[in-house]
Length: 156
Ligand SMILES: [Zn+2]
Image (tube, rainbow, N blue to C red; front, side, top):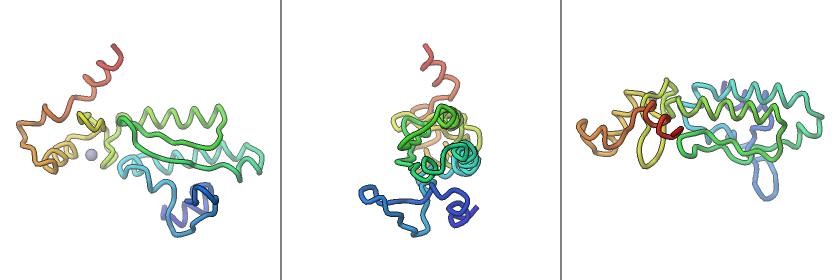
């Protein structure tokens, strides 16, 4: 979907001036802040599920709903909103969980977590990122930890 199509279908994705609440209508959407891989993997599906839930709300709640911020934090998707419902919170939590195991660059299943800047990567994107950081293949283990090891460690 183009941004124009997204805004027609999900008017709450319009970017706004944070202080005046005026929409920009400059062709951007709040979804533009989502890392590319996640957007490709589940961005539109997430919007569709959010919208289906929000359509059960009153019109004024629907019209007053705002995305405050979409960002990556500690390797996971965070969507901040001005108000929510239990159902909407569940949808957002589900996609936060999905994002943890999805390559943020291309959207394929992630196999590695980068150290330092904690992010999920697939095999190819991890190697690409390693080289982009001017590191050699033998430094791979310095920069990445397998996703299984990372989340097992977290559960301890
Ligand atoms: Zn990838």
